[in-house]
Image (cartoon, rainbow, N blue to C red; front, top):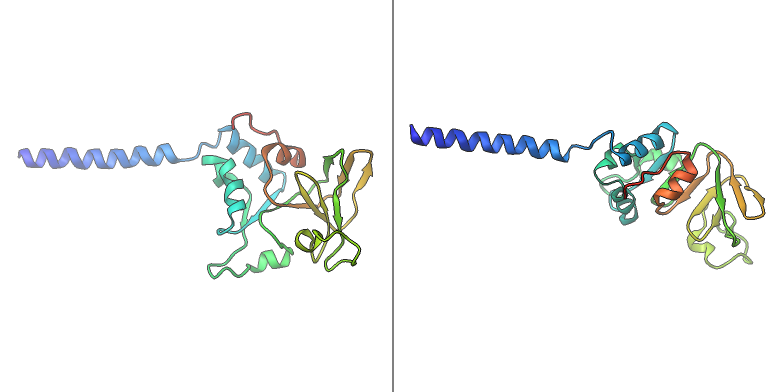
Length: 187
């Protein structure tokens, strides 16, 4: 009888501990980062990435436990070939963030502008690595914007058309500015 009771207590402790572990690790949909990720999704923003991409993992890590709420599209098959959806969307690098609304960048310095690759011989050498074979690219200090239409440029303001995308990691501040969502204050 004593063995039965001890076994029963151990089983209850293991099951209860497992239940608590699941509840603790379950993302909270009302957490600020989850609300931000859900807003990105609601605004039509898409995050294209690959499971093997360290920059994608870093962007997901910003959201902590709330990363499951991100509007994430996996582009890589198990054999590292690109999935057809990402081929069709002309995704060339990871992470790529797609913004269905126009995006605005304030920049006191001029970006490096790369024509569709391979571009003309007189463009900057960096364009061979940072340019796109489908779209024109604007390389700012903290964002790389890819678009099929030139932005409106007035002073230090660059306004890119709806459907523009960025390539590379983005922080909460840029994600908020480009999406219209409010960045979480908790980091």
